Image (tube, rainbow, N blue to C red; front, side):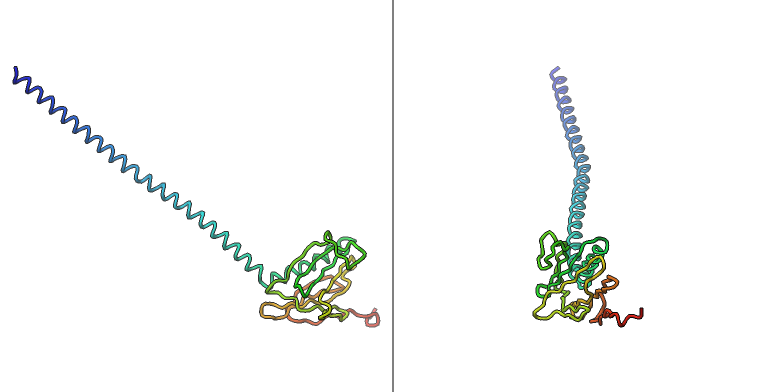
Length: 217
């Protein structure tokens, strides 16, 4: 009997050891499977984060480049001259479509121009509520001189030129000579008769208005 009991105890202890070993093996295998399945998820999540960060950085870079290129384009001669021509055309069109008068004031000293609607009989008085547009010519576009079609020209004592437009057209025609980055001249020609404002290369000659004696009819 003692021998049988001892043998039974040994068998029970061996079964317990085998069970414990199998359980530990199962836990190790489960842990390995969990780790092996979790690693790709961690890697995939990190890759998604990296892609999102790269997209955000690319968007900021694109916006920055767009702003820089926009500033560079705005500082070119053609853009600055085009803005001045558009302002002159705005005055002519607005005057033709209404009974109001408009004036473009060119300041050669300050290198700027202003479009205003004339509302006061005193033309020397400029009210703040009359001003529609105020702009600078810029570093790459310089207003050199102004010549009217009655041969009145801006000089050292007269550095402000004014083009007035009414329903009948421009009060005076003329030209505004601009210089580009290489100091090459361009002429903004204001035609008194047709109300047309054009930008032409060079310091062009003016088409002078004819007198009554020169007309054929």
